[in-house]
Each structure stands twice: as C-alpha cells, then as structure tokens.
Image 1 (tube, rainbow over the protein chains, first blue to last red):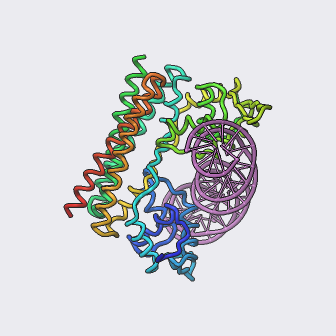
Image 2: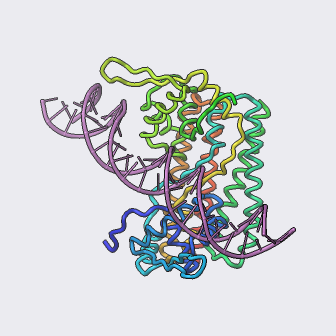
Image 3: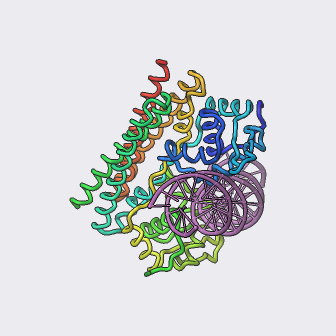
Length: 180
Length: 180
DNA sequence: GGGTACATGTAATCAGTTACATGATTTA
DNA sequence: TAAATCATGTAACTGATTACATGTACCC
C-alpha cells in the first residue's frame, strides 16, 4: 500500500499525465491541450480542469503556485508522489470496458420505429460527421507529427482508424436505408 | 413547439425506445434488455432504469401501473405523447459527437512516461479484452439473429466492426511496444 | 475608447454511481 | 429449512454539466 489514494477518476489521471508530460501549467493550458488531443474523442469540460487540480493538491499529488501580478494565474506542478501515482496507474491493468457513447447508434437501434426518411437522414448525417472528423484527424496528424511522441501518435492513429471504420459503417447503413 | 419537453437525456430515450419497441415492462425488464444489447458498449446503471421512468411519467411520456399482489411490480407503458417524442427524436439530427471513453487509450497517450513492460502489458491486456468482446458479439449475433429487427442487427454489426478494428489496433501497438 | 474575443474562475444543479436494504424464489 | 441467488427498489454522495460572472487584451 504505497499510497492510500482515494479513488482517482480518469479526469485525475488526465491532469496528472498532462502536467507530468508537459511541465507546470495553468488550468487554461490544460484546457487547450485537451482540446488539441484527447478532447477529440473524450471530452472533459473546462470546469473540471479548474476543479480537479485543487483536489489533487489536497491529496499531495500536485502543488500550486499563484501569481501575485495582474492575472493571478495558478500554476500546477506534479509532485514526486503524483508522478509515482501516475506510473503506478500506467502499470495497472485496465478494468473498465470501453464505453462508446454515440447517440447515432442509439437512434439506429430504435430506427424500426421511425420512417425511411429518418433512417436515410441519420445515416447521411453520421457519415458526414465522421468524414469531417476523419479529415480533422488527418490534419492534426500533420501538425503534431514532429512534436508528439510515439504513443501520442499511436493514440491519434486509433482515432483515425475509428473514423475510417465509422465512415464505412455508416456508408453501408445508408445503402441499406436507401434500398429498403 | 409541439412539446415543452424539458431536455431529455440518452437514458430517457433508451427507456422510451425500449418500452415502445417491446411493450409494457418493469425496470427490471429494462435492465435485462439493456444488458443483452446496448449495454455492451453503453452502460446504464440499473438505478437509472428505476429512476428514469418516474421522471418520464411526470412529463406525461409514460404511465405506470403498480401490481397489487405480492411483488408490487410497477409496469411502465409509453403514452401517445411519449411515442411522438421518440419519433421526433429519431428525426432530429444528432449533434453530440461520439464519445469513446477508453482508459486503455488514455494510458497509451501517456505511455512515454511508463516503462517498456507496462506498454507491452497494456497492449496485450487490451488485445485480450477486445478479442473476448468480439467473441461475445459473435455469439450474441447468433442468438438474436431471428428475433432482432434489421436495425438492431445493424447496431450489433457496428459493435462487431469496432472490436475487430480494436483487435487489429492493439495487435499493432503490441508489436511496436515489443519492438522498441 | 468601445466592442469583441480570449482568459479565468465560481456556483448551482443534476445525472450517474455506489452502496444499502429487503422481499421473493429457487435449490441443496 | 437454510442458503444462495434473483428481483426490486431507495438513499446518499459526488463528479460532471451548465450557466454565470468578471477581468484582460486586442482591434477597429
């Protein structure tokens, strides 16, 4: 029992991981970083990114320093214990199964209750959305190619594959919806 | 402004949709149905499935009837307004982007902070998990082949494709993790 | 120097999760 | 008939979401 850590959430490890990876930063920085990476498939509202560091500090995993000048920004930095906690988490096996929250899929599941038009519209709309996302990932891939490390790029690669699969999938659904 | 509906959640539409699809049922039935379908990739805790119908009844989208005999079960049934609300939802375009909550991916993103062993273990573990899930979907596919409607089967097909993609992905990650 | 967008945070609400609790069936 | 499991809920907590509020920098 190295650390009597009160169950941390994914948000906790996100904050811990980002700060460990990129050094001291403000909640606003976290927000920006998330928006440019993980946020593409796992959204963390900015209010959480302001609240969570305070919690982690009370657990001794971060330390914060407030500016005295105008903006009074609070910078957060990972402590030794914080880094240890992060590494321990990385070594633990994942238990929670992947959750895919997709309102489009939920609708499709009930689409026998709707009309043909609705099915076509859904499929078309989802196809467009996933195509846009795929394009966005491709662009992102170019942008970060030389600043991201190998595993960050691997994560992005998963997004890319996912969107590619989704495009094919909704394209097939569209075909069936049109044909029936 | 057909209905002054207070923003419904995905849980609301899940309940509405299931009851519309399969007729009057108890919260326990809902729980069972979810466990055998959507629940594979989008978990809805049973407490929600007990609480939500009450909310929907207060909105006039369901009506409940309580047994008087031993178990005092409460059966829920969709009203006309409920059905209309469901259909309206099916026709609306999806706005929320797909959320993929996967602790494994989150870890991978930070895996430069961990050791080679941890990366191999993660990839291997995720690969196993997705293989099991894929197998489970295949089995489910056989079971429901003749009871599920076309769009329910299409939803399952998405799960199948997702797991297939995930298996390939983590297999590739495993290779890179081993090789470096 | 007034408007607009960016930056930084707080407060209130609410959904989701965990835990608890108990009655009804089945089975050993 | 005792134990175990299934069935049916409720209560408490807390993380997540939304909304609000204000300060700072930029630009027209």
